[in-house]
Amino acid sequence: MDRSIHDAAGWKLNRVEVIAATVIVPSLAKGRSTDANRTGPPWAPVFGDRQHTGTRTKFRVVSSNMRLAFLFIPCLCLASDWPQWRGPAGDGISPEKNLPIRWSATENIAWKSPVAGLGTSTPVIWADHVFVTSQIGDGPFEGRSRDFENAVVAKRTGESKQVKFSVQAFDRRTGKLRWDYRFEAEGALQPVHVKHNLASPSCVTDGERVYAWFGTGQLVVLDFDGKLQWRKHLGRDVAPFDVLWGHGSSPTLHHDSLFLLCEHPPGAFLVAVDRRTGK
Image (cartoon, rainbow, N blue to C red; front, side, top):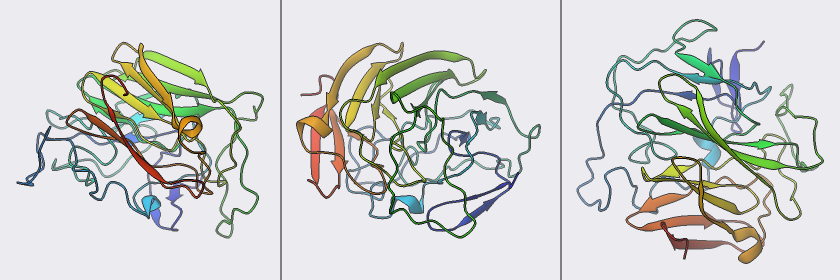
């Protein structure tokens, strides 16, 4: 197979055997942000930083020819948490050194585990938990989508009767599945680009709960045992989720607030809710 991955901007990452539903997580050192103006937990970004930009695909690897495997890079030192998209400080930087730069089917692989479905979200890590989301079943794709010459589209499951979403928790050291929370996509599904599906946003966690948002606007909040704490459907309650690229804005935490940003043509909005209750 072609062992290069292309994102939506056409950039090329060589020798990384991880495609769409397959994700690679580097181990992280204990370093934290040094921004003297930050408040709240040290890992929580100040809302409005570079985590949410108009060019989200600049930082997100968008892949093709997806495989159902989860690859984890072996830790070279005591690792820290990676609780949200782009890491503790929201800048995509790990201060850890001497990380491996080569992978193969056997080289520098600590464990592999199958993922329930397909998606372009990235994993988040807290203590011995690794959380990742995916979509089970195919939704509609946008007919106006354009792609690069000779590029291949994202893999399909071949099942479209009912789309479901999955939030999975794996053991950080062994890769064993701890739990798998699934629920059905609600409402009419909007078509998205051929390189995406409805599992693009990454989770965020505060160490007590994991917050998972999907491209329909459905948000579920689970405890570390996989039990539902509360849920919302912003695509139904606020405005429809309808954008060519598919919804990709990841939730973020600051103090007791969970921030949710939607920049869709039918009605853009920013919502802050209580992280414990959803109010």
